[in-house]
Length: 212
Length: 95
Image 1 (cartoon, one colour):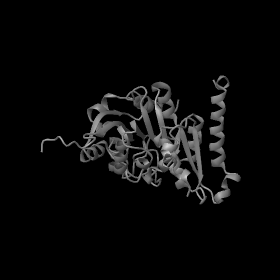
Image 2: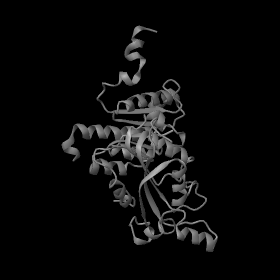
Image 3: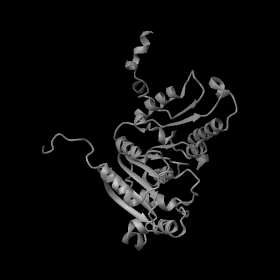
Image 4: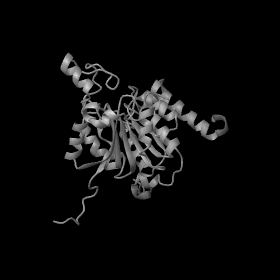
């Protein structure tokens, strides 16, 4: 059990048994290991960190060492190779989240993305009342740490999906302990700390049979 | 060069289609004889066949000899993978 386990449990509720899964930024392979055991999934992880790769391999995970910013996912995998492409708590650290989402929905039929909400009221109040960048449980790094370079709010993310003609199949908004309390449901963008999105392309293959 | 070049239509994915083994591919960044780009092609061909494959790209300045020299990343990956092989062939001990 580690700090991410509650999030991984929420994700696995969405994964159908025997699915093919690609986990981007898979770390030490905890999630894939969990899905393999509980959902009999197959597939791969991609991760840049050598030490995490070593742990993932020792767990029996097939991991491809790769930099998510090099946009080689579509070189490695054909279209619709996976039932789910997952990326947990990583969209805010990549250089082009928009391109990565395109890649995810190219090689995967669906994508699952989780990230911390920059628009949570605690973050806003720290900015507003103290004039300082948020630093807390879901955003632990000080502003000088370059890890989180593309922080966004739930509304920002949903606008991006809208622009890209991406459908939000399901959304779970939870607090920092990954518990779905009543408050995130009332006003997700203000009261939710972490969101899990399940998305897919509205029109996967452009059809010729549309009414012209 | 010779007729064997035409086996499998020069298609690496096709050539590896029958392979049932599990694979670990390791490349070294400064090796220009077996460059990482070529290893990417091997990995890609294995992925085309949904093979069990892991890939590591080891940072090293020692070029083609890198695999002969101590390197924590290389040794860590190799050790972890070989331990996996060991537990695959002796399942009763690993459980």
